[in-house]
Image (cartoon, rainbow, N blue to C red; front, side, top):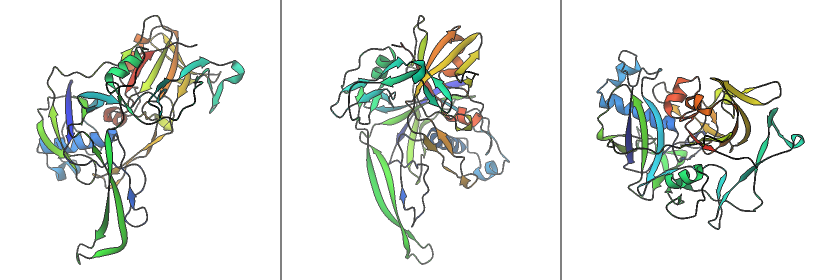
Length: 375
C-alpha cells in the first residue's frame, strides 16, 4: 500500500447537502454544509476513478466489472482517505479544538480543565467522569478556522495570538439561488414546486481541499476534472509533489500521564456512541481501554451537539445509512494508568479504529493528540 497527497480545487460553487429532507414544494430549502462530509469526497473519488480507469459504469453497477481501488458497488476497494485539510492563502486550516474559543472582541480564550470532587463528578448516561472544562470569563464566541501553525502551538501548549497567521475567519460566502421545477414535456413551470438552494463559494478562488489517500497502486492524476458534491458541480484534482507533506499532529511529552484525544474529522462510533468504542465501562462506571500492557481511562470529554451524516446513494438509488456523529474539534481527556501510550498509538492516531470498513476508509475518526496537565 502507498500514500499520495492530492489537491482538489473547485471550479464552481460548492453544494454539499446536509442530512435534512429536501423536496420541491414542501421542504423547499436545500442547505449546504461546509466542510463537506468525507463520505461525499470519497464517493466523488470512486466515481472519478471509474472514469479515470475507463470502467463501464453499467457493468460496475451490475457487479460484472470490478477494480482493486474502488471494489464493487457495495464493497470498498483499497482506496482510503488518511488525512484531510483545507488550503487557503497557502495555509492549511482546520476546525479548531472546541476548548479554544474566539470571542466577539477577537480574543482567544482557552478553557481550563480541573478535577472535581467525587460528589460532583459528571454523570452522563451512567458514565463517571472526573474533570470539567471551565473559564471564569464571560464571552460570546464566533466561528473560525485555525491554521496549522496555530494548531501546532496549541498542541505544544503554547500561547496563540490573534493574527492572520493562526486564525482564519472569512473563508466562504453563501450563494442562495431560487428555482422552480419545469415539466419536461410541456416546458411549463409546475405549480407549487418552488425551491431554494444554498451554495458555498470560497472567497479566495485559489482555495482547495487537500487529501492524503492510501491505495494499492499509483494514481497519476494531473488536472483531472470530475464532479464534486451535488448539482453536478465540478472540480479539478492534481497530485502534489513528494516535497509536500501534511503536518504531524501527535504532540505528547514522555513524562505526562494525561493526553487529549481530539477529533480532526467527525467521529462515527458503533451504536451511535458519543465516545470511542475501544473504551469499555467497568463496574465503577468508568470508561477504560486496555491493550498491549497499557491501560488508559477516559476522565473527561467536551463534545459539541451531534452531526447528522447521510446522503443519497446514487448507485443503489436510496438514502444512505444515517449516522449520528461526534463533531470535529470534540475532545476526550485521557489518563494513562499504566504502560505507555506508544503501545496503543496506532489504535487512536492518526485514526480511531472501529470495526467498520466503510467508516475507516471514508476518512472519519481522524485525530490530533496532545499532552495535557490537570489542575
